[in-house]
Image (cartoon, helix red, strand yellow):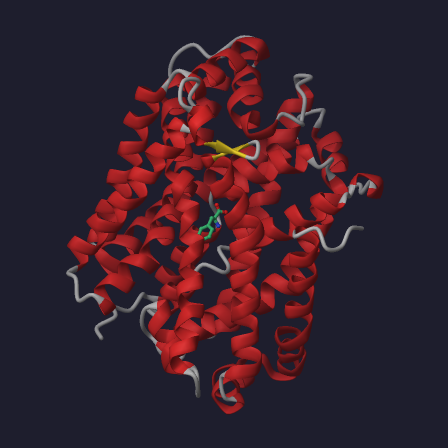
Length: 447
Ligand code: PHE
């Protein structure tokens, strides 16, 4: 099996590029708004530290030791029952269903970049009109921009690890970080900044329902790209003698800082112009454009930069969402990279079109079940069920199945005194926590 190697910095940017995505800038602020701020943010942060960190190391380890596609890695590393563990690898791939809607949202962002060059909507109702119109009537526009997102993603994947994924991330990630950091500095100078800080960090525990809890945990997995083989497949290309602990810390810290910065920027802008934080998925597409309009010409510049940063974040994650399947086809089906990238890209592209139709006025009725559209189901099932479940399996695999010595040989030296703590966490804390979340989700327990 021929797997290319990232450079050290290339890996860090690619893994951070996977983690920092629409989850950080689009989803995190709107779910924080929906679930009432502080308490939700704290549960998310706690999950990142207590569970995300140990599962991130576990997932990296499987990729690093396996050095091949996700399914093959499970098979090779399982000391016994290899054919059964293969299914764990497949399950890891199921999170790729995120891609059923992800590239559609990147398409919306492209559309908003074009809007930002012209006149932005002056009021929230006007902005709401544009957004709703795009969702319910704008099938053609959405397909056009979704196609663009698909073409960029596939082109990067065709060029492979070094010439495609690494290069793409080395350019886009630093640009994205600079834009968000610049906007944070700008927001800090505004009167409403302290209000945004208190909204995000002052917990009101009465707002923390069972559902909010599950969504916060699911989001921690989603935003760290855990449980779907993305981090795993990138780690298969890590240079030898890499320090997985340092790499995990880098990815987690970058991801968390970008999410918090994006949240602070957004809420500051919204509060400054009297807009509502609880607007749902339309938050950055409805409230924000109206706020940018109120800022005048600066607003247009900020809008273009903001939506560009969002597009960069989305594209680097989209690439990592498709790559596990591409590598699988290359390894298992002996396909060339070009064929595999086009095949997988097209597969997701077509489901993306279904997602678009599931929101459109004429067709949504045929593509909605139990009150959720195909689009919503892809999001709900992946973030709240598949990713945490696959994360649970990965933790169990590394904690209980792979030979102890093998795990220790990679991690013990880099971790030192922390090694037993991590091991305890990956063997017991993470699985139990995730199991409780699954029970909660299935409605067996309520709190
Ligand atoms: N982490 C990405 C985000 O926050 C989404 C993602 C999930 C990417 C799972 C890869 C794997 O948007």
